[in-house]
Image (tube, rainbow, N blue to C red; front, side, top):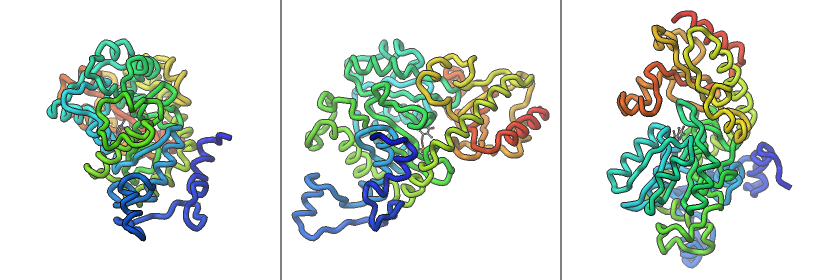
Length: 410
Ligand SMILES: *Cc1c(COP(=O)(O)O)cnc(C)c1O
C-alpha cells in the first residue's frame, strides 16, 4: 500500500488530480479566485468549503507542493512559505505570546538564533541548551515553556541533537516539539519517528537541491494535541483539534505576515524534489568519502561529520539517519592559512549556501557567524579557522583532486 518516497513524489500531482491529466501541477498565477455565488465565497472564507480566496494564503500550485511535503514527512498537513526563515518566523510568531518560554538548542542555525533574540525583545523568554543531551532540555523546561526547538544535525559543527530523548521529554510534559529537518531532509530522517509535533524544512536546500529557488515548509505530524495548547485562538478551534495548529500558522503566517511562496517557486521546488533521494545518496556518499580522506591529511586538525567514528554522536546518527548528510566542517592545523586554502580551490565554490548539487565552502567565523562575535562563537564551539563544506554531487575523484591540490598550497 505505502509506496516508496521517490515513487510517491513522481506520481503525486497526477494522483492528486492535476488538471488535464498533467504530470506536473500547472502554475496558477492568479492573485484572486472568483466564485459563482456570494454564498460560496462566504463558505470558503469561513472554512466550510475548501478553496482559495486570495493567493497570499496559498494557491493551487503551492498547495500541490504542500501535499508532497506532507507525503515526504508522513504528516497530516503542510504550509509552505517563501523561505525557510519565513516558515520558522511564522510558526513562532503565530504560536507564541508574550511571557512564553522556548527551549532551543544552542547550536542553532545562525539566523534562527538571531530570530530568537528578536522574540526576546518582544517579551518571550529563551533558554539555549546543549541539545545533544535530553536531560539539559528537561532541566530547562518551566511551566511557561510552550515550544522546544531543535535541529537534526547542527550547522556548521554537525552536532546531532538527542532527538529521541527530547521527543520523550516533550511527550511526557505535553510540550510542542519542533524539529528543523533541513540538514537531514525527510529522505534521511522523519522527525515524526521521535514524536515531533511540527517539522520545519528549508526547501531552498537539499529538497529543491539545485540552488535556484527559495522556500520553506512547516508540516504537522498529527502527533501533538492542539486542544492542550493554550495559544490557539477561538476562531481557529474549528473541526478536529488536529487541524487547529496548522490553521493558525497559515492564517497568521501567510495571511497576516505574508511570507508567501509563489507558484513559480513551488513548481521549481517540486521538480527538484523528484530526485531528492538520488541526489542525497550521491551527496552523502561523497561527503563520507571526502571526510574519511580529509581526516587522514597532515594539514587537517579536525573533521566534523556524523558519519565519522570520531564524531561524538556517531552512534545516534547511525541509528536514526539513513545516511549522515551532505554537510561537514573541518579545521586546518595552526599555522595553515584557511583563506589561502579556500582561494586555491578551483572547483569548489566559495559560497554561503548549502544543500546544492554543487560543492560549496565557506570560512564560518568571518562570514555567517561574524555578527555574533567571538565570545558567542566560542560558546558554540566555532573555531576561527573552521571551514564549512556543503558537499555536492560532483564525481568524487574531481572533488578529492580539488581538495588535494588546495591543501598542497597551504
Ligand atoms: C537555510 C536554513 C534555514 C533557513 O532557510 P532559508 O530557506 O534560507 O530561509 C533554516 N534552518 C536551517 C537548518 C537551514 O540550514
